[in-house]
Length: 375
Image 1 (tube, rainbow, N blue to C red):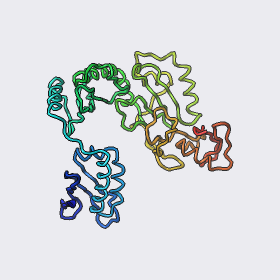
Image 2: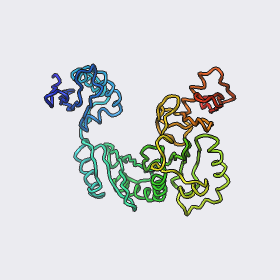
Image 3: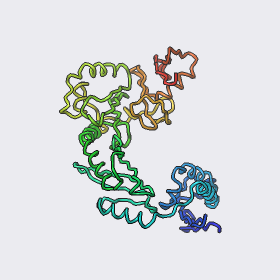
Image 4: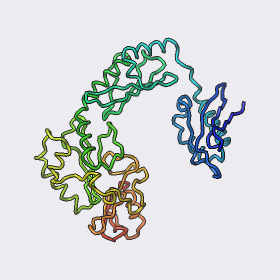
């Protein structure tokens, strides 16, 4: 049978598609179909949960084929090709047995149905919601094997340290929830400390911190910043610190940090301790202009760099921000380390000693050096 493509509006900007394949009919929609353009780059694909599960892991391939298709019919044929390739190696799985369903219902009765926030159509995975003593919401993602509950499920949640479920005897959902409740209570002080950091200072990275993130990059002003890596089991102890910026600014801060650790008081929160030791007040996002800390890299003219697995940032996320600054106070141009390395390697006057490149700032010609992580 041929695919059925039905327009959803009068201007043909949205379509619903029925695609028969291997005795089953797949249903999906395509929206924002452009007019007068050569390709469907701005179009959006919407799938039901069943199709999303089948396409899991090849989303980028599907998006690329959508972007390169000249019309909806061409994309439907491209998607049919992708599905045929997937189903040849991963046939459609039938729904679990009634016994599996009965066991799942019994487990959810024990946990409490009010904790269930999502259940896959094929019953292979579910999300459970619990609240900690401070009222924070936590979602536990659970994958159910066909042999559940004799075969133990796998589970994950947004925690700084993964929960080890190997010590569980049996695989009941109630046991899993109990394990996570115990683990979550261990990190109450860690989240209190990190929430204070996020509230009081300008956090440059991560953009949207999760409860699993132990890393923060904090703005100091003048294109300088401080990266901290916090121990979730001892969040009020001295974190691992790394300064970024002009040596004229950060060298005194390093000295204060090393000399002032005797002032560290674990009864205080992290930011209060850092301000006491460094003898400064951290600027907030509201107090500091975007032109001060959010300047683009002076080489690639972008704020976030392309992925660089060799980034020196502690716990850096994908797409790092400028982390090297010209030491000339009258210039103070920010750069991505990776961009600066590439620039210096392209200049014939650059010198290298061991793993350090010595050259000049692309703007003011002030001497600048950067460590090569590639040797």
